[in-house]
Length: 619
Image (cartoon, rainbow, N blue to C red):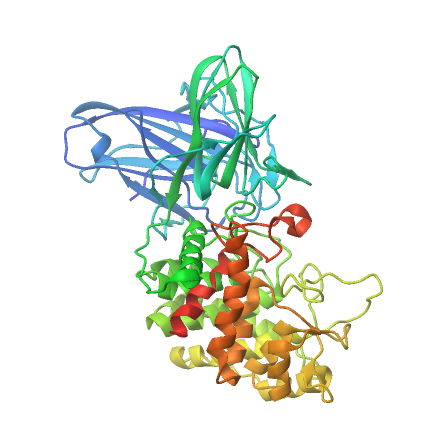
């Protein structure tokens, strides 16, 4: 635990973006156990006697931080030992962390007795092994990259105390676990130094290079070489990291930047000799449950499993390459698969509790966690109680309700309060993003000719779907919540149902336009008829559901079609077999692949692992 005397400190009173601080000290060890406890803004790397001890801060909220308690006994020797701590202050809010100012707090215990702790007379300085004060953005979601240099780190100045919360809790999830170094194999592509890792990997770039003179070596990372090279500049994104060498043979490992990639491309002087390049993989520790399959089904299942593993880090991630962000709907898919894929369910619980803390002033959830002032998605907020309900269903753990009930109640009351005279919930005003999925009419983008109030089928169906489950959670907790779901269903039928066709329109602004997801949701809340089910299965007029939302389509078919297994397995084999035929080693964000989203489509996306769940429930 942190020593109660420890203070939040920094090396100066005016930190700048992308500032790297260094702290070092010595201690005598003659005991049995040494423990170093640390919390940092934005991230840290700890060395003991020159050996890596730990890295990777769990990002918190301004009102709540998290510490790592690290057993460093195995790195200690009898007598004098050294401890070195590098802390990176990024200085920007993005989809994965909130800028709350620079700072670090730490203490060292030996056999339960404090030996040192952070305070104003702690010595610190700049760590010039990293490029100082040179922010270079990866993407809006990921913030800045971290470039390395060949300078020195010296702690020779007294620190200052900084203001930050002392509500500091233990890291809520386990640390990721190191795998064997994966060295890239050079490819023969003229004019390019490209190295193939063999499959999608997540971890940290390690480079050993020899140059005849000082140089800046750039390493770009990507999931494909569709252009004959690594596509690393995409609009306002830059998927690369620089290593500044002073000449000769130099080794770098960049632990401040977690990357996902299949390929690495090196930009260096022509006479540079790349002695080694690759990725040190780190994955969240899980025990995988075996599941007997063969042929194509086994290939799909195993690739789903790998996709899930790659998208678990400090929390669930949508895609480890482009964003590394946690969203409610992405996470819900990953959680549902995880109940069947893995022995442990503590990761689901920790993520649900962490999401519950990301509440906006109006009661709905932010877009990602931790983040603030985001273009939040009402549909995702509405589905949060569904994810909690599924957790309780699969684990039997009702204790979570005490922690997350206030957030769920705030969401549901907020949406209930927006029900209008029609019995429906109109789209929310700015800054909310009225998104449902990446398909025509459901992505929240209005056409230039669309004005006035708009109401979407999916949001209203989802609210009913969630309310039914939320009421069951309330009954378990003794909490009062009531809403007339029958009146909402009547409003949905009146506003959206086409009685001649037996299908539901997408929105009030798109009458005569239909989506597979919207009609599936209508079926899931008991609306529609046999024609609706048939349309969800076969009607080409319905905009197809994307990979992220296929689960709701499959659930609707399971509920209404006795021959559902044949349809669902055939659909999975077609879509996922196609990705495998295209060389996928993890499953894509959408079926379009890398060419989607302006050539920024992710080839590893957690929400696309859903076949794993359906193989289990359809067995």
